[in-house]
Length: 257
Figure 1 (cartoon, one colour):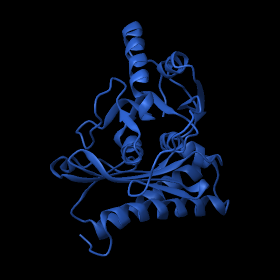
Figure 2 (cartoon, helix red, strand yellow):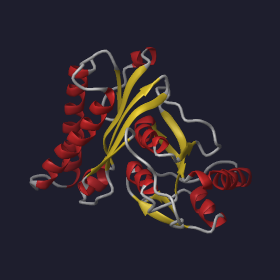
Figure 3 (tube, one colour):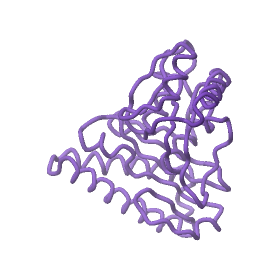
Figure 4 (spheres, helix red, strand yellow):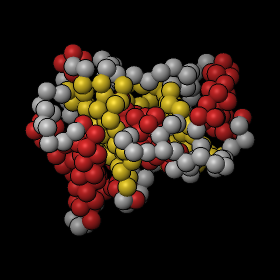
């Protein structure tokens, strides 16, 4: 382990550097659409992997853009990364894409950073608080296929839904107070959640599965069916609405990112 950078500092620098790489390759305009998205995924993944190989060679690594190495299950330290969360948004010039970097120790994100590069900001678990005050009256949902449970929840608590791109963008806009909750159903993977959850927990937000159970990472099966990130004072009401929906429908309907 390199003594030059603490875990916290390394997490933050990786998120910052990845965002700068991605903005750079998009900014020159030489690639567009699918080719731009694929180049962004590949270049960001390669850079992050090289950084961790140099600075944390003994740690495990789990990324959307790399083959899974089952030996990570025997390591209590694993970096869970999504180099480019919201590839479609990135490739089409939208701002709601993100960079996810989390160090998970014994199943819990201990250091996390979510970059929103087009906004010029990296949210860091080492220094973050969520916005309190009046509710925005909005629940963030998938831009493409909002889950039925989220629509139901919004109706039950008297809010409206708002369609946003990447999971990281949705979570960070809850932290900023633009939305009061992010309700997801339909399946994600650990790299979609670990960093946003790590930052959100550090900021004082509620994070759990839709049934209220705790989120744990570095599992053999990296699939996670659902997610709730919300202001803590709304958690009980939202979880109750989710339970009612589940009782009525037998499953959480809809899929989203």
